[in-house]
Image 1: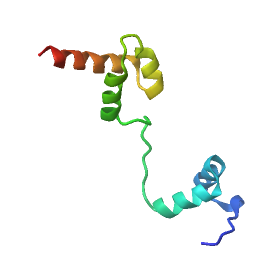
Image 2 (image 1 turned 90 degrees about the vertical axis):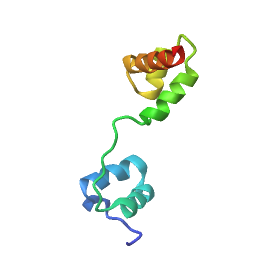
Image 3 (image 1 turned 30 degrees about the vertical axis):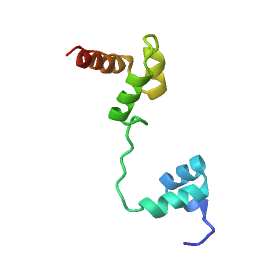
Length: 90
């Protein structure tokens, strides 16, 4: 692929990606994933790994802060903490 990219003729997806992350990163992405179907998860963090971190980081008062930090609902955070509490009761 040529080093010069004609931005005006880029596919809309790649044009937006170019604007978002820059041309070099866009071209790297293109080379790595071209032709593939890609689905972007709605959450940045993995549920299982995030749950482990939430359990470790919970201080008894920071449910809302953890929900904001990891992008999950406060209700989900409560369920994780409740499940952990129940496991330790047994």
